[in-house]
Image (cartoon, rainbow, N blue to C red; front, side, top):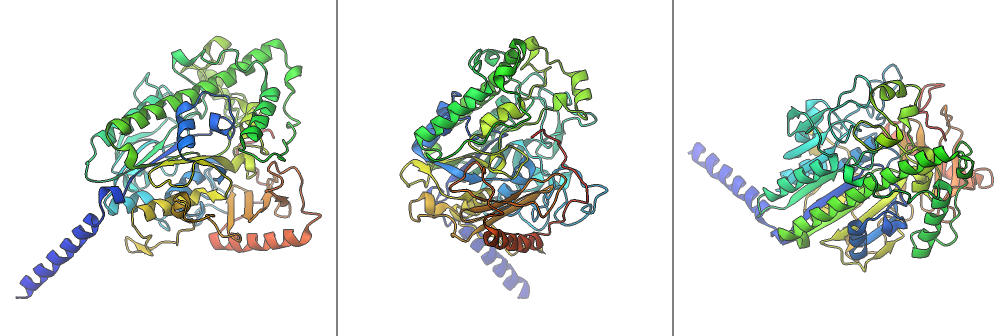
Length: 552
């Protein structure tokens, strides 16, 4: 009798679980497509005031919402940990994407170098809740089998586990660091001769095409374009030939002014001065100008090619009658990239030995081109600095939201929003709650805020005026509260070197108010102390330098 009662109880529980999964119609639980560009600058896209041909991304913005105050982390790995967890990068395990071996942070919580067990990914929760979960592209938040996409909620995946790779094959870009690719849980090689953006798009289309039609999907498409090395298919090598012969100084001003004209930035925004370490364009030799122009031509071609593939993917969804039931989010993971590893004292010798950057070879699979701080400042206008730094140039990046659930009148949204807000929005759309426990382990509460009601036009803001957004990565610190921001870019790190800015009036962080506004600085520093303790930040060791040694 007990066995019969137990069986009936089990049957009822299974039936209840099935009813929960069937409770919502497909139209009530839309598909979610999150597209992440790698190192895309703030001014590159046409809709953000740029000059690169990006009609498909621009159309998403025209039909949807363009956010001009979207904040990420200053580097790719911490941003990706925050995307998937809805939490701070320390809580998610990526307090540093660089090695912390032989430092006081080694082995400490927050510095695991992979997703921690203090969070559960949005992919895992969506999968548990009946979504099909797909990923194609760059992962960069754990390379051991327990931490790859297949183990973190993605049913189907084709991924690069590291932060960068040759776009045409398996040749290493750094010494003793061959690229690692996974298809689901299997180690594989990248298809030689194929282009990364082609492959990632094709893989994602295949997953969606073969998906069950009666279940929604979450598609996480994380391109490695336009991340260095700047390489493009042959037909793109000369597409932007001579377009940037005006040079980086002139282009930066033109983009900045055009952003004002179209309303992406306020009319009173001030352009930060060119970095003193960057040689003025008019002082370059003719040969130097020729090479510099080519760098930007290749970068633009990568972005152009990326836009083409996004257009193909959108048309693909339309052909499958899935487009109208898909929420599409397009973003960049951090600011424009200033690294120049070809000329780096540590990485350069290996790269120069294995790659040929002669003018005729630039942009091909056997070249390793990056465009350096001189062009990164163009991509980061109107902001200070670029990728790696906690200034607005490193963390204020393009965000476009379009498609299903976007009921608000299309336009430019001048509201604060951050990368941790993605996961809770996806969960609300899917009618899924974030748990207190997962796999018998306590997980930390999600820190992001759903923006669903905002894009539906039901609310005027996303965050409370006193909301605090703070972040630390390898000594780079920031904290934003309302229209105020403190940031620390000291190197070696000095915790007394925080600067204070009123960012609604000073987008370029050109006027440090820490001396003239001591009470506000004290208030913000008190918030920093609370945050630092809450997430477990361990300061850099005395005299420890930042990892990349980018020339400022």
